[in-house]
Length: 380
Image (cartoon, rainbow, N blue to C red):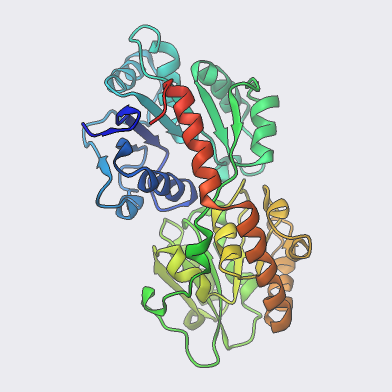
């Protein structure tokens, strides 16, 4: 095993709700890449077919994807929880992510003391469509019980911090809010037109988004909101997921199929600067990394007013937020930006400055490193 200045590289088990290339997965990969050989990683997903983020892991990072790991999904009976707990043996740190990995947290809670399991740090980044409007009382009770043995709970947003403290009853000494951060310099660099299978034509403008194609992202709403924009505008939705057919159907229904493009997963740093407007239509978010990425690239944002988005944006940019589910309001924000290139430029410049000052990756990396080191009881 490789060693760093603090001793042997820790063996970290990551148990994800999904390892698709969404916000929390991309953040986890960027941290892994930043630590390089300083840690060894084993990654499992509650959705074994959703592993697109693995392609973003640098070649020099020790990352393993076991095929025989117990499923993170199923009825949380004693035998299944015991299998999950036994699979955590032999690691130095266990990291779990979102509701889809909560059975692993419960397994650690029930059997951690019996089998002397490594410390566990849970990460909660938001909710799927089944809890987008209101949290499940049953799940809240389960979370509250499962998290009692966790070394730490990390959340990115003020909204989740409040929920964790008031609803899940997490004590302040265990609760950490670490805002998402990015390599702002990478996003400030010129984008790469060759990074997409489509090219922007002469006199063409793009509304773009980066998202897992899931129902909670309300991407058919984005298609509907975009539809009234002039014909020189195109909609580029980057990502993969089960909502692809619904998005394409919405584009057909609005008669704009030729102006709606779904190029799949992309490297955000190479692509987001190609957008003239960044749009987000989600019913639920907490601290969406994609908004910060767009800001760092100097792109104005039109979005639903969910999670911490209003706090992330500049005060001026906040006027372009729409209530979630209000297609007309989101469409109005897009039309305002599409019709005013000076406003787009001003908001883009303000966004870039704010991202550099508040949301750089180095600040986030240091906070995560401190949190994991505290759980491990040593630096790495």
